[in-house]
Length: 560
Image 1 (cartoon, rainbow, N blue to C red):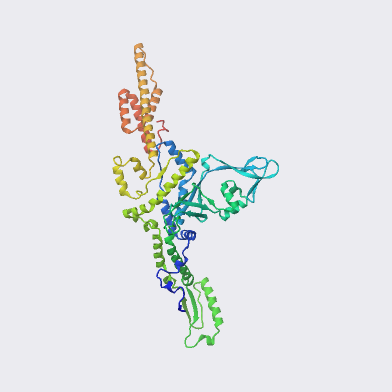
Image 2: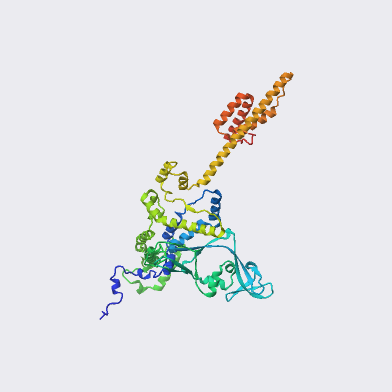
């Protein structure tokens, strides 16, 4: 016979694992999703930690190709057309909140409505139609409203490709525990059903036909190969086939903090603002026996108003008045330390070093902490790379493109200065220069192109200087021949000052842009060949340099 003094909760209270918060925890995977949304949106520590966990491994893309054209086309696809980095951040939020992220590639198409009476096909953008009991009814050019059928034609415009995110609340899984094969089903949300029923053109013009059929037949949609399930590690005995939300360990600490904050709110409302109570203080006789207490209350309230207007106001009273303070002990009652300790436990629930979340510099100096962080984020990074390459393969297969596979530059050495220095020491022997540049977040292909451009520019300047000197030598040779001819004829050659100045100016313009040692060599050669020309060029270069130093003029302004 049961003891009437015992209830069904008696044994539970004797269980050390039982508490009130445990009764509030989610019972299935969909309830877990709701709690995870609540936690990540209302716990600043977790929101900050999740954003850092997402952004830290998102380094620059590296391209697995030697073709510059393919590399540039793939870069344009990811950065400009798909906005891949922003998409991966959104995917990471789903991953760390729900433990699951569902993505598909939306391939564009042009939809036409074909009249069942005359067979005329009209692009849906220009047609007048409505969806009536699951059928398109169009005002056709044949003059009447006719039922129309849908005809979708694939588009070859890669710019219209989109990456679609699916709400995990609307997903259902059929999982085979023996083979790990999984079938994915999607149930239309209430808002999407409403938009279809109201013939919303934004929805009907771009929504794939299978969704419209699902609305008409009131059935779920089964996804095919065009679905990527990005999931976190889970337990074999809990929600098999689903990923386990990383927010699961944070639920009880979050609920505990919520209770403490609720208590803090009550303490703040009740005990933070002090209340002053004034009362007639009894001496030998009780004041209430020989005076009007209502009149005394009015005088006190009047005096309080006067004090608020004039702090120097002096009140008179027929007998002593006492004062007592109530409600100022709130600071002593606040559970501040308990909330701080609970926040520390909440931060640890993400399984990363606490310094990573709080943003202190300790983790940058700890090899062990960096290794822990690397091991924690490497699986997430590998899934990101696999997903991006999956998207590229889908687009290549659909449009016949040749976009290359990509990878993310290593993030493990981003803050490890010792490893960076070791890598620099081994560059050229056991480590390639590309690996070093990618570790330093420098694009090796871009740097290689810049080096070529600099070498070409230096070569061009050298050729310009040599050409100017050759022209001057030819001018000198011509002048020499003229002088010899004039001497033979017994005449004196005319001195062309303007032409000599122009030549000197051209030589100075070329020499002022070359390095000092090379310029000195050319000037020395010019001095041996034509002393007058050398003097003019040297003077022009010296004037230009002096004016550059004083800031009064530039070489272009003074003709050099």
